[in-house]
Image 1: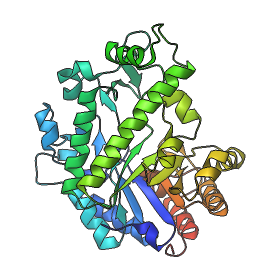
Image 2 (image 1 turned 90 degrees about the horizontal axis):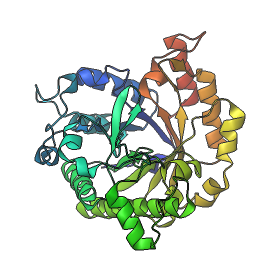
Image 3 (image 1 turned 45 degrees about the vertical axis):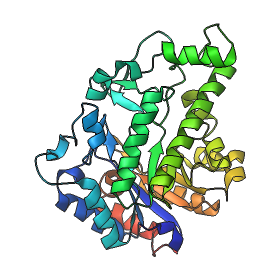
Length: 362
C-alpha cells in the first residue's frame, strides 16, 4: 500500500476498458503502465466493476448468481486477475493503484444481479425500472434497500481484504437520477419517516434532501466497513460539480467531506474552453472544502469521437495548479496518449504530455 500524493502532486489517469485494448492481455497492461510511469504519472484508477460484473474473482458475485469474474477480454478462461496485475505493476513502477468501481449502482437490466433480485431495483416516476444509456438498457440498484447495502458492503470488504491498495473509488454513478426512487419500498420508507403521503415530484426539495441523506448514510456505512477491514485505506469519490450533482443525482458529496467519510475527491470538471473550466474551479464549495480532504480535479483528455487538443489539456492542468488543488486525474488513458486532435500526431501529443508533466511530482 502506498499513496503517491505523499511525494507531491497527484497525477492520475482513469484506465477504462472502453475503446481500448488494455484489458486484452497482461502485456498490454504492462506496456501502458511503463508508458504512463515514463510520463511521470503517479496514480492509476483502473476499472474493476462494470456492467454488473467484476474484473477480478469474486465469491460475493457467485453467491448472487453472477459470474465469478467477467467473461470479457478472455477473463475466466485463463489465470488472469487484472487487479492483482495492476497492483504488481503499480509496485514495480511506483504508482498508486486506486481501483475504480465505475458502474457504481448501475447494472444492465439483463444482468444476473438484476434478474435474480428484481426487488433490488429502483423505479422512476413513471414506474419503469430501466433507462437507456449508451445503447444499453440499464437499471439502478436501490441504495435505500437493506439487501442492496449488504451486498455492496460485502463486495467492497471482500475486495479490500484481498488486495493491498491505498484506496478505492466510486464516481458519479454511485447514485441515481433524481427521477428515480419511486419503487414501493423507498416511497414507503419516505412516508413512514416524514409523514408525507403525497407523491413527491422528482425535484421536490424535501424528497431530494431525504434521498441525498440516505445516500450519505450508505457512503458512511461503506467508508466504515472498508476502514475496519483494512485500516489505513482511503475512500475516493469522483462526482460532478456541486450543486449539479445534488440536484440531478442526489449526491451531496460536500457533506461526505464535512463528515469525514471520504479522503479524496476528484471533481469531474469536464468543460469546453477555459472560461467555463475556470468558473468551476472558482466554486465557493471547493474553496470551503480545501484542506478537509485531498481535493483534485478530473480533466477531460477526450473521448474517441471527441479528442481534446493537448494544448487545452495543458492549459486546464495549469489552471488546476494555479488554484492550488492537490492534482489532476485525466479521463482517460487512450485519449491521453493515443487519440489525436486535428493537427496532432501521437508523437506530438505524447511530447505535449511530457511538457505538462516535465518532472516527477514532488
